[in-house]
Length: 184
Ligand SMILES: Nc1ccn([C@H]2C[C@H](O)[C@@H](COP(=O)(O)O)O2)c(=O)n1
Image (cartoon, rainbow, N blue to C red):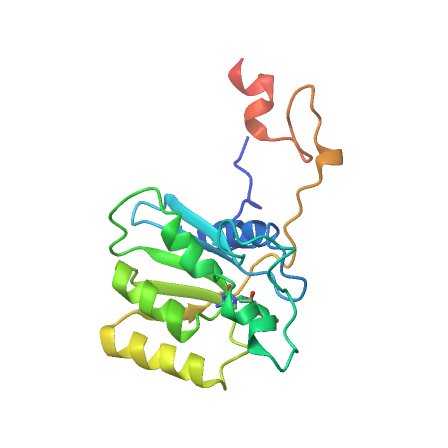
């Protein structure tokens, strides 16, 4: 039997991991995830945008339209990229790649550069016109951090727990390795 053709490519797998992490975000308007991968294609850190540890949701705002900047989220929220770097499970992240939903802002660009990450793969550059993004690109260009937009092959990646056959743990269509015939 031939191998499956419809498996996830590496870029899709890592970007999907970033988006899965984003599902943990409590930000009501924008959920961002990030996934750091080393040279061996091993995930070494994930993160999503959230309030700093101990800064409780009841006390810190998730809004963004108040005239008083202390009442908006921006002063407080940690970006997904920062959290992914802080959550890393290894000291050395030199030459790693970071997959992220939104192009990193200038503050995250500094963290990315300082940590030794060498490539940024992003899905959306919707803030390209903002100075924070222009500054990020200026820094990345200056130090040789590459960046490229992710182009998905699959328009959808679904994990439907209802479709999983819990008795023999296969998903539809059958995972070839689960076919006993192949071993006989
Ligand atoms: N590269 C980025 C950009 C933004 N974020 C976070 C920060 C906020 O929680 C949210 C943006 O809020 P919006 O202005 O769209 O309401 O996304 C991030 O984690 N990484």
